Image (cartoon, rainbow, N blue to C red):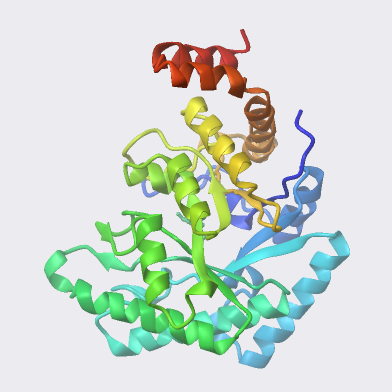
Length: 345
Ligand code: XLS
Ligand code: MG
């Protein structure tokens, strides 16, 4: 397998219990400490956090208490030799975010969302990461006429500006997704994320996180999204997984549905030197619902293994031969060359 220059991470939510909108969990919940203990064993280096993964019940705690708990967690992580990759405000669970968080029609709810995000930054600083991820789950509409999308752009910029002002060292990575839970989301693609970044008070500190499945749901090729974000120096984190076309967000193991698509994502990462500035490869993957307890870390182990095999495949791809075929516009043989390379024949 490839000599590894990549660092890997996952979140506690990636060891999930199998509940879906149609049925209850199929595996008992595991403790956070158990999940943390598995991380190193699986060859991973860091964990990503929602603010309330780090500080449970965060809405009902004082600022001082939040900072204290986050510092304690940091000590625990240090003890295990695990870094905190990022912290993300969970802005989709509270009764205050039913109609959106930053883009709610209710000013009290918008205020809650911003204050919660500032607390998330305090958690991140206590855990010594400068990266805040915004997956903007409820920023969009169920009903187009219910919101003013023009105003919502201003609300989003205002919220990000407040976060940038709260701590001059944080960087914000926006994780676009075109739909689910919303009918239509306001930041569906990397292009939208980077355009919004440009309207903020400090565009240099606003970048992006690409999730493969989210790009596929937007009808885009994640590999091209990676190249696009990297062209701007804005790919600060990455959620690799897979998605079988336009359906619910599946978070399948990396390459599970489309091996060639995964190969092209790895090629894009390789040509852009992703990871060289300390960026992590995160797998935002979930076990299949029928998965038994004794197999429920396999999706994390397998995604990482597949990734490393694909790094080998990217590095051993015969670029010189491909160049000749491209110059000859012989895309038929280029196509076959890729397939045979992936099949190992
Ligand atoms: C959900 C998102 C979520 C973020 C972190 O679709 O991928 O898991 O990555 O808030
Ligand atoms: Mg994600």
